[in-house]
Amino acid sequence: MKRFILIIPIIVFIIIIAVLSVMTLQTKEGRNPSIVPSALLGKEAPNIELPMLARNIPGGFKGSDLVGRVNIVNVFSSWCVPCLAEHPQISWLATNGFPIYAINHRDNVSDASNWLKKHGNPYFAVGFDPEGRASLEWGVGGVPETFIINASGIITYKHIGPITKEILKEKILPKLHEAKR
Amino acid sequence: MKIIFAALIMIFLSPSFFLYGDKLVLASTSNKTSISEEIENKERQISKLLRCVVCQNQSIYESNADIAYDMRLLVRERLLAGDNKDQVINYIVARYGDYILLKPPFQANTVLLWMAPPLMVLIALMIVILLIKNYQHKNIYQKTDKLLNPEDK
Image (cartoon, rainbow over the protein chains, first blue to last red):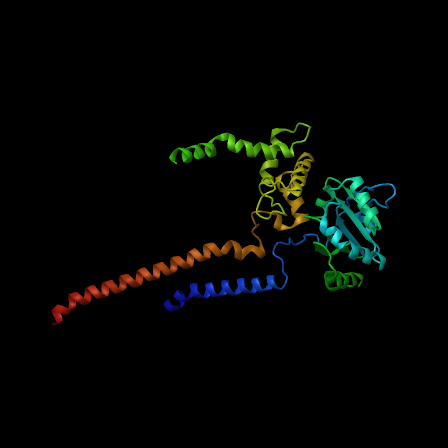
């Protein structure tokens, strides 16, 4: 009995090392510990209303518009470099039948309009969020971020960071098909 | 060398050094409209409890990040709307999760986190007590052994 108690610290130590090494290996395989999990998964899309960016850009939407089909909500800014990197993938999704709503995060009208003119506007509707207030409602930590919302208006997936070609194929498309079921 | 050291200590100890930091944060949150001291105090208190999501180990009170600024405004907005401290915190937790809290709440998935340190202390105490008992036992045995031995011989 005494011996057993003396061994306990060693056992606890080994368990801690085991847990930490498993976590380290996971990090190697792509689990990013700096990514903040979303509290909104499985919940209804926030019903905050976003105004239109400019008259010639379709837009303005609210959470309740996102019901009836699978929708994507993409948070972007003209000043955000990774947003430009994911722009071809966003455009691909738009031309392949997935309506994408945009939250234009902490931007100004002329920069955002010029950005969309220059790189193309794949968005079904753009909502303007110059003060980042709506982004807080969506639990946004930074740009870009992408949400998948199913036909009942429930957020089923959130991707943080740019959507690369690999991520599009391996994560976004499977999650979109899942949301359609 | 000593003089430089003393001067540095003086600078760090002087209240203006801290005031500067405090003013910096307050200036960035203050709107043009005057806000009651009570709201400001509550805002400061709550801001210190919330994590800045892009800085990870700073509160939104300490951080100069855009999102921290937005969140301080949100805290103020909720306070002005009449929310109390818990309501404001719950509002933000509902959107950002428990992760936003710098101090993790005590609940089912954090039991281990909270209970591990006291458990470790308990185990350590048990081991120490056992070792002391063992030591005393041996000592008594050895003493009696020594006392008994000459008589036996």
